Amino acid sequence: MQRIEPMTLFGYEKLQAEVKELKEVKRPQTVKDIEEALEHGDLKENAEYHAAKEMQKNIDNRLTELQELIACSKIVDPTELEHSKVSFGSTVVLTDLDTDEEVTYTIVGGCESNPDIGLISFHSPLAKQLLGKEEGDECKMRLPGGEKEFEIEEVKYQDIVFECK
Image (cartoon, rainbow, N blue to C red; front, side, top):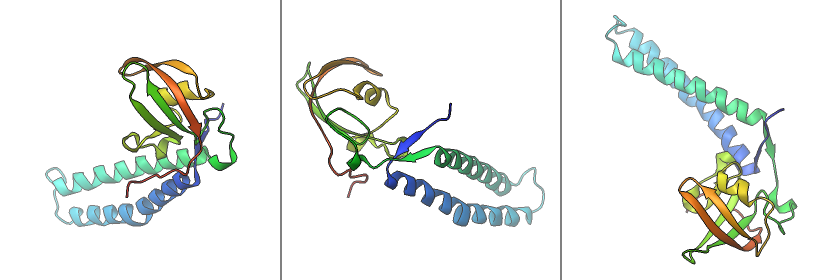
C-alpha cells in the first residue's frame, strides 16, 4: 500500500523550495568546502574535511527524504472539502472539559505543522482522533501527556496562516 501525504499547495511548494536550495546552493557549497579542505593535506586530522563530508551526507539524506515525501504527496485544497465534520484543513475549536480552556487547531500536512501557532499534523495523535467528529461531540483523547476530555465547539474552514508575521 502506497503512503499518501496530504498537504496544501503551500506545503508542496515549501518542500520544492527546500530541494532547490539544497541542490543549487548548499550541496555545491559543501563540495567546494570539501575540495578546499582536501588541499590542507592529511585527512586523519583534517576537521574541516570531516565536517564538510558529514554535511554532505546530511544534505544527501535530507534530499532523499524530501524526494520520497514529494513522490507520495497529494495536494489537497481544503476550500473544496466539506467541513461539517473534522477533515483535512478544518479548524477545530475545542474546550477542555476539566479546565474550561478553549484551544483552536487547524489540521494540515506533516510538513506544514507548527503546533506553536495551532497547526497540527494530519498524522498527529490528536488529529487522528478528531477526524470525522462534529460540533457538539464530546470525546476522550489519548494524548502523550495523558487522557483528556474535550467538547468540540466549532468545526469550520478558515484561511490557513502558515507563518507568524
